[in-house]
Image (cartoon, rainbow over all chains, first blue to last red; front, side, top):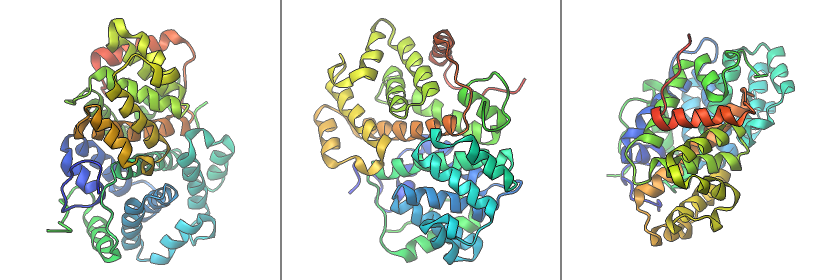
Length: 184
Length: 181
């Protein structure tokens, strides 16, 4: 049961967005810009994989499952999502994305863990300043969302089919359209 | 030196949002709503929670700038900021604020660490849903800002005077997106 009185029809972050629309607006704008809006080089699927990986390191069931589902719909590949969650180094992704995942994993622990050598390794794989910036900010942002969602003990459904439907909606529509009710 | 090419001499988060205003606009809007918008917690208390979480994350830039903003906003009670950052349990603050700082400290580690008894204790001390919500979101948000600022190794001034000036600016003007000149 959530720690505060939240709308019961919606899970996770969606229940918090409805509870407090004033903070929902910039939070949802941020995630739309980071994960969905056009990016010069990183695909929507790649950015969702970074969000999924960080959420899984934070053991946030709601965020890791929903972003995993969104990534799966973007990439038309559920296997790569599972492999990234298990270990990005063994996943079928580019060397550049692996080097960015390494940076994201360090940010999840603390920003200070990111060393010049990590940045250099990413640059050697062709990573640009914007890619490094967005990787750090996606990782930092999900360290926020994971804490917000779990710190208030929001509802995380058990049924994977629910996440698949929500994930399809977000992959198709982005983050700004209204959510559908999970419970009536 | 920062890990990416940000404007030189501009400290912390400001240099990062100038590099990428597309995301920066939402970060500043979030800070303004969360720290200056309507809330049962005073602006000074919210800045204090931000400084407390940033000190747990060992983020010198965020801790120093938000502690300075809290000192400015607490006015003649400004010495309690350093009491709280050293040991909030013995600081001259309300039991409600202590219970909320306990929750913020747990969120800093992981959201799951917040237990029903932590929330019950805050309610016993008079906290309502919005106090608890704002505390958790503040702690979560600074767990983001701290990682963003340090993860890109942005410039952290060492001169205390620089932070005092930031504290005055944040206290008087709040959070407005800086523009590239």
